[in-house]
Length: 243
Figure 1 (cartoon, helix red, strand yellow):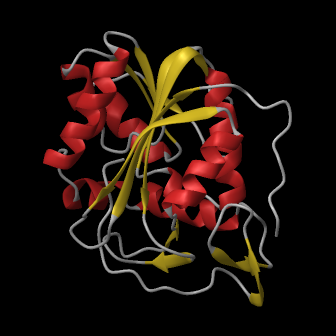
Figure 2: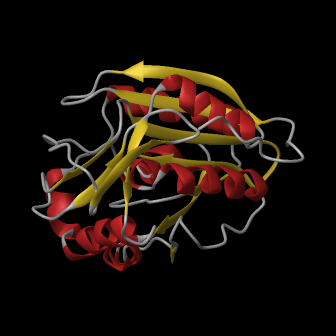
């Protein structure tokens, strides 16, 4: 999915309980709802309002194009698994630069939209589905900001298992602290998790990735982190960080 914009209303997700701290940085509000509940709501919102999102989105701007160019430069004519393809803007641009892109999305409406446009597309929920592979790269542009911190680490591990030796991971995240819920842009609720550079670097290192670049990018509303990593040494056990 291309970067999302809109004014966010910061608030706890679910029933408010005592605050805790993720092993990967920012303080978080612990929710009493099931771990997948916020993600389910977000997917339901995208599925119900896919055409609204299409109307509100646009092809990649200069910053995203430069980022995708960097990914293409590492992958060449290899195969990229894209998580959360959305309307498919990023995939189309990336394919114009050489790589072959396998499109996926967790919202059936986006899958159907891409299939209707002639693109083979797989329904894939990043929180639980097998990624397959091996691929030369995994791309998740403005996708993993919708999962919890714990789910984020799990996705990084599964992406690591899905790429070949020397494989690439490209992810973009909203920069900031805590979590938020917004109905901006779609008129339906979406969950966001914010990240800071040290926490992103720690999560990547712990899951066997070596950061090649991490850029702080100014968005139209909020700042972003544009990250590119490559497979490194896989730890025998994911270390526990102090709570």
